[in-house]
Length: 327
Image (cartoon, helix red, strand yellow):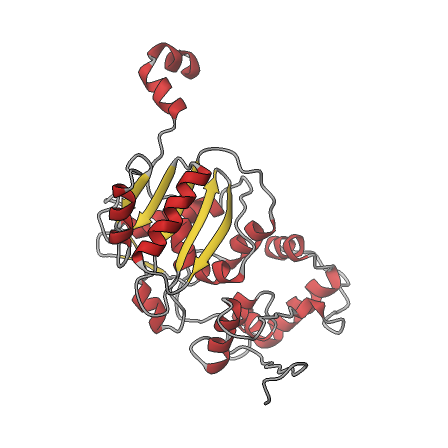
């Protein structure tokens, strides 16, 4: 095809898992690494996917989907009927429906054979929420390790995570320079940096620049703060993030497909001591997914307990603690 003005090329397909040519093209478009634009069309945009809802009573799951995606009873009836139709010969009808009639790009590229730690519905809802950013500013920085990995930086204040930035092909000094400027301009209370790969050099440079009061180096493979429950620090951070996303109080995350994919990619299991274990980045890549850089940056904002000035004041003044506790 000629690479000239007014030339348009469209690649259209029903997704079939990950690791194939179409998924690779989708990932590149999603991250801006190709001239293509990633455009997803959910099934409920199609007028023909409707059915008479006579006598329909929504299940809890159907009600949740209706609220998130704005489905009406005709669409719910179609979904229910199609799941029943696809549930033949021992096939998981819900999985099959998501494959053939996805609501999100993440459903379209779903892979069977494992348990994802974070459910897609939690991510969809958090992307739609609008929550005021209140509280200490915590910044997660996941520097690129090698190859096609990306450097990801995200902010979080309380229930609101926002302004996710992604960079490619940056050196250690370039990443350190970006974070240095960020610290000066945004005055964060904490900057958690993954020290794996390029991260150690980034942290060394930031400490050299005098940011030891806010920079916290985090080793994903180090012991968890609660070693009785988690295999390592990375698993602990991700479970903390999962609990945050699944809490009863609304939370907000950047409305981005790449973050959505990263959050839903890792699977989990338990070790022989019943400790929680998260799938490694290498194993995630072997299943066809890219490195979960965006989600790891967000997980870093849950890595280290943050003591604010107000917390310190309460600890140093017992009378205030007593009053607050109601003693």
